[in-house]
Length: 134
Image (cartoon, rainbow, N blue to C red):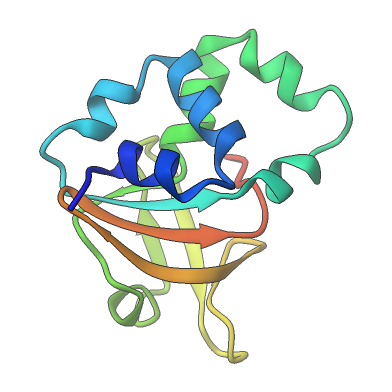
C-alpha cells in the first residue's frame, strides 16, 4: 500500500493537486506517518475555479498552504465515519461542514464522488470542487 502522495500520483486525475502540494512544500508532511483523511479535488474540480485563481494561489505559498491544509483532517476516517459527522476540524484550523442527508456526502459545497481510497498513512475521498476556507 502506498502513502497519500504516491497514491494520488499513481491514480492520475490529481495532477493539479499534486503540483499544488509540491508548490506548498507539503509532500513530506503528506508522506508522513499521519494518519490523515484527505478530501482530494480532482483536476476537473480545479478547472471550476474562476480564471486566474489557481495561478495566483500557486504564487502565494501561505494562501496555498491554507487551502491545501483545509482539505486535510487528522486521523483516518472512512466514509462511514465521515457521514456520521456534522463538521470536521481541518489541519488549517477551520471546520468543514458535512451533510450526508441527501444521498450524497457533501463536504461544504463539494460532493464526495469517490470514497475510501485507502493508503498506508490515511484515506483519500475524491471531491468535485476545491474547498476554500472562509
